[in-house]
Image (cartoon, rainbow, N blue to C red; front, side, top):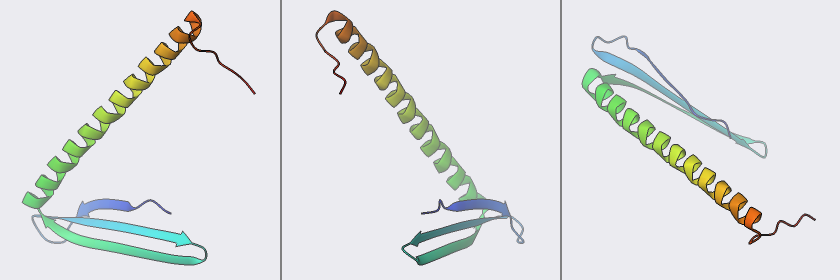
Length: 91
């Protein structure tokens, strides 16, 4: 499945932003594609920008927290192996 493509460009209308989104998928010889094109006024575009910035910040925080959790888990595992409470078996 291909990733969707989203582009924002200037609009032919004054005070608007043109937003274009394309998505396509292929599965067992069948394919489907879709595209959406919309002109947003500056107010709607500004609201969309704020919502995207908020969503991006939350996603970055989640990724950072996950990386920190994984680092703590790895450190704990190494400490437990060194203390002999966990044995690592290879096949």
